[in-house]
Image 1: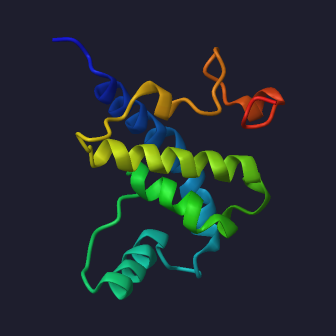
Image 2: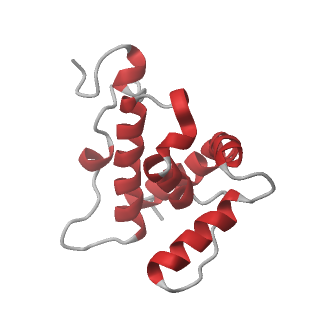
Length: 132
């Protein structure tokens, strides 16, 4: 069976989680009050907001991207505005992959903004997100 675009995206998001987990954990743990687990604090915050208890996985790309976009202050100077914007784009792609909509399927055009032909983010090559 041929590998679909959605399969590739899921695999990429899994790999993203593996790569992001140590970085996010380091910064979130440093920002959490002494002796407190940041994932537990996030679960409590979610429960206060939604009224239901959920578990938070430190390796789930959804959790990691959410931390980067919602708790960006924890990352101090480690994330530029471009990095934060890129995390927001990735979070939107992750949400579309996790909750597919047949009326608007995820395509390569949706997942590659900010990337050049070599796959590196344009901002990392010294150009702006739009490749300027």
